[in-house]
Image 1 (tube, helix red, strand yellow):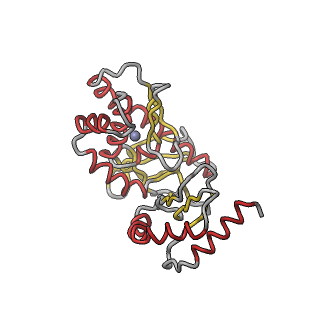
Image 2: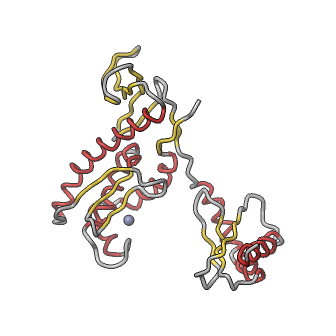
Image 3: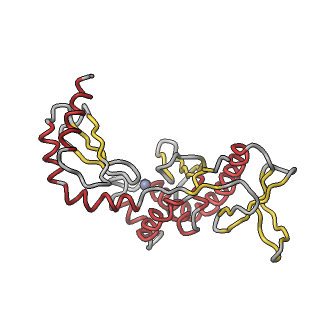
Length: 263
Ligand SMILES: [Zn+2]
């Protein structure tokens, strides 16, 4: 065992001796550059106990004892906010949501990889997301490409009024996958707003929130990343942005991130 794994094992033992309530999942990680013991809580993940290499198991146990009440409150809260991403089945009738409209999946044998079409069905007509039969990953990628295309057109169109209002010049957009943790980002060096494609499967007011959030960064407000100047810009453009942010934390955990069932 290396020195660090030995320390981690000693600490884990000390933590276990505290008699944690069932459902508390704590992971010890030795962080060479830290100077103090820290606790890090991310929804859907074990609580990370971040430990500097010189810490003693007793010290770590003390910190956990000291934060017992905080953990007791935050762990159930984090469990409620843990992602529970939607999983799609590529069969006729599966529901998809894109830019505020819902569609039923209709598999076709020819035509383009994806298209949106009004089709008659038993109860009248409905809008269908037609996808050409293919391997599952290919069908999924084709649908993601459609989200990217439609999302890009929407972002450009809706971003314009804000660019105009704040005199933002030469801003670029992209819609692509940003992993599972971020809905959007703004790069000051590239002057580029990046939006995660699953954003466009969220309710309209949340799509708007993500776009406006990044555009507020693109005005390059003074101060901290989400500091007072950025918040002022947000409140100016979207007075209810805090409610939308809270709704995104709830609704976003059930978003479709491109997962599908493999038979
Ligand atoms: Zn931000």
